[in-house]
Length: 361
Image (cartoon, rainbow, N blue to C red; front, side, top):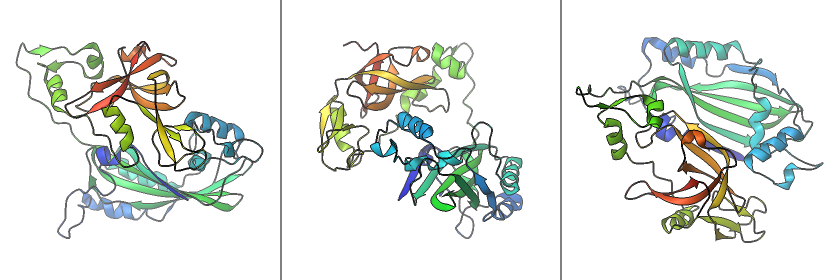
């Protein structure tokens, strides 16, 4: 079984591993200057960690915490014959707050070389996992990591840099259990264009929330930029088209399994509990509570006005969804706060479900 998971929206922000810095005479990406790229390629195939060991054996408490955080109550992850969720593969090899003690000198040398060349920022772009056997409580974990590749210089929306891909082979009792391939971008942040100097006497203050994010702006220029910017469009496909049709009709639709009647959100082609592809929908009442939340300060996008709260809302029906909390300052959002669904038109084409604090009709 193979799982590919995209992180941090590489297509929208990092440009993805195939974003090019522009063509060279041979049609490929532009190499870094001063022979840096040639030095970087020497790290491909070198070990980043050898005979590393997991800090803990596979255990039920970690499995339970993972399942609670993910909202996954599958019976395979409980009881005397429990297995670990496959997507926990990386959890058993992470260094924790005390960091990694198994990394090789090659790993440190590569990152020092990139830092010294000015590529000091980092963002994860994607990962790929392959599962070969289930992990069970008591399994002792070991792993080896290799630097698989370092890309030529790429230009992305974040800035120019190099993608570094590592592959970790995870073993249980010496037997290969899975492979985790991870890609990051080490980059130099792109310079932000500076706007024209304000005309004397036209400088105005932003609202309090905007001041916290960026201070003073000239003559409402930031508000004008936000007005022109469009919110990112949701990806609509055959698996979730019915959800967006419901939103257009001001209905929040939740999938219900046609066999076991389990509710699920977000929309999926099959039931996670019984595997059935049969389903229908129920309309959510709109009542919910804030299960968890974060306050977004950075990065700043023109269509948004940070800081703002993004919440994981638990609906009265028992499923959870991510959306904005409105009607209350971002710093007043609290876990357990009652909220109620409403629909927010953000431009002439797009309407989104959001939740208003207070939970009153």
